[in-house]
Image (cartoon, rainbow, N blue to C red; front, side, top):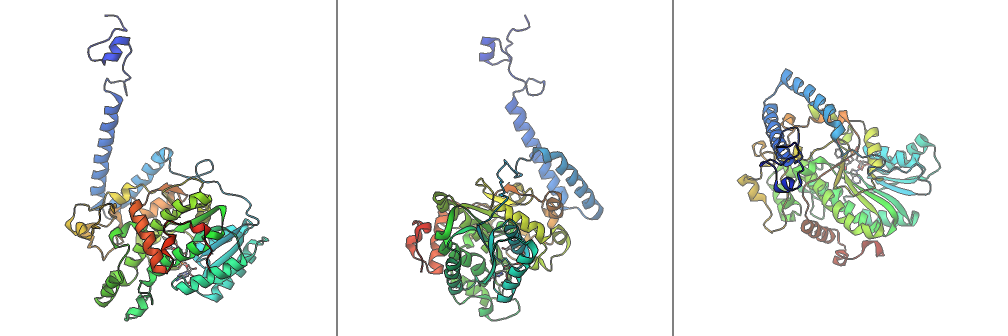
Length: 458
Ligand SMILES: NC(=O)c1ccc[n+]([C@@H]2O[C@H](COP(=O)([O-])OP(=O)(O)OC[C@H]3O[C@@H](n4cnc5c(N)ncnc54)[C@H](OP(=O)(O)O)[C@@H]3O)[C@@H](O)[C@H]2O)c1
């Protein structure tokens, strides 16, 4: 048999033409088989690694960290999720004449993001609840950057719908056009020290944390939408905590909230349950707003700043405290998010592979099934909590090594913007949540499918 002759093991087409099938690695198996085998082997390896990692302590954990860092550097060239010029991130150098609103711009991440806008020449409005902190922050901005743009501090309590209405009217009077809307303000605690419901529940009957973080921002964004200039940008600051919220609890009826308060459900009452819920709400809202904003050529991006050393994270200890980056750095990343030029599902300032959150998903547990939404279509990916962690009372804080990503390594290794994915937020849930939010803030239902950019609000 000559060299070019077909053997019986070759496919029919190859025998007919005399071509050889393309081997993957010198052997004769087809490339797809090799790929499937390699993927399977990698999954088994990662599963084994995770099981092993969960049982680690002390020196062994330190060794694991070293292996993690080594693996990170080896795999880094393969990571296509990092954003940069030509890869989904086009930061404009001069913002002269443009106007940026940064909610929660009096402190922390928001302040440093505002500083970036101002340093690039934009007029900047920073807001927070305290009037004195607002004017102080504006003063700091003027001193820090020395650029020509205006810097204004306007007080705004996002937990009060009337305050949001007054604020947006005042802002429209001062700046009829808005180029950047950075919805950053956030709180994780309310009424910690008080025993009565009013410390925890707003007069409208919502958790104060949820009302400030989501409903206030929702109302503000819809009221200011007509001022947003084509080519402008909205950034909604979320958090990885969204993975620990449950979509079936997104639109909690008020009855449940008061029940939780009365029965001392500390999880729902003292912040974290509401915080997580509000951060999932931020994600859901960002996706809905993005769909509506396309026609106006306004970009909308949901992001998380990761773990940052601010007032919000005071009291964090151990791995999570070590993971925190400075608010200056986080502010820079938040600023960059306004220039993300492609529509990414979600953006995070470090590599955030989806399996980190999804592999722990206790989807088959009866406990979770109990909380599943009844209506078809409102499906979701389950969050990172494990059943054994006793949902809904504990984060993974006490045992962070359950995560394959060691946060203090991840963020510290490469704190730059990466595209990531958030929990499932199907269209039906987005629509239902938008309608529900309109109702809660007292806006007309006609804004459900109507063009929010074409409305005139009084
Ligand atoms: N730090 C982190 O590790 C981390 C992680 C994930 C996500 N985030 C998110 O990042 C954002 C910024 O947080 P941060 O860490 O910079 O917190 P921060 O230092 O506590 O700053 C929060 C800002 O929000 C304002 N604010 C709080 N409650 C408000 C309300 N009811 N109405 C209006 N403004 C309000 C605060 O101003 P006043 O106090 O003057 O009202 C302040 O300017 C938040 O959305 C947070 O959820 C932070």
